[in-house]
Image 1 (spheres, one colour):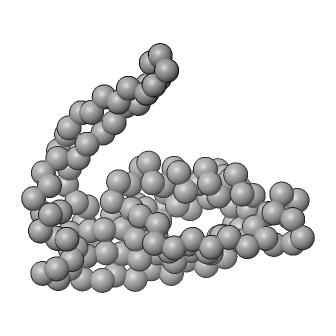
Image 2: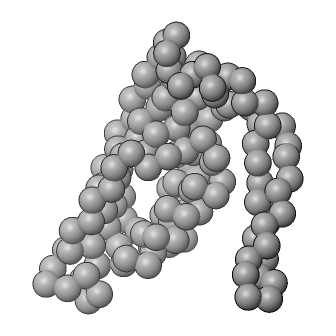
Length: 134
C-alpha cells in the first residue's frame, strides 16, 4: 500500500453540482503532502474546540503513534469517548474529516445514554487514525 501512496503526487478535489436530472462533478488536482506527526497537536486542539462548538463532552482521549515501516505509513491513533446528541456527533465528525484529509475513522460505536438517543443523547466511542509520514 505504501508504494501506491508514495507514487501519488496529487490530491483530487471534487466539486459536485446538480445539473438537470443528474450530478456533474468537476475534478481539480493540486499538490498534496502527507502531514508530519506533530500535526496531532493541531488536530487535538481543533477536536477540543469543535467539541465545545458542537456541545459534546469528552470523557477520554488516548493518543498513540505507530512508526512507519517499509510496508506502511506511520499513523497516530486517537481513541475518543464523547457524549452528546446524535446530530452534534455527526457534525463534529464531518468537520474533522473535512479539515484533515489524511484522517480516517477506524472504528465507531454509538450507545444510548438512557432510554432514548433522541431524549438522552449517546456515547460515541471512536478510533481515529491520522496517517503521517514520520
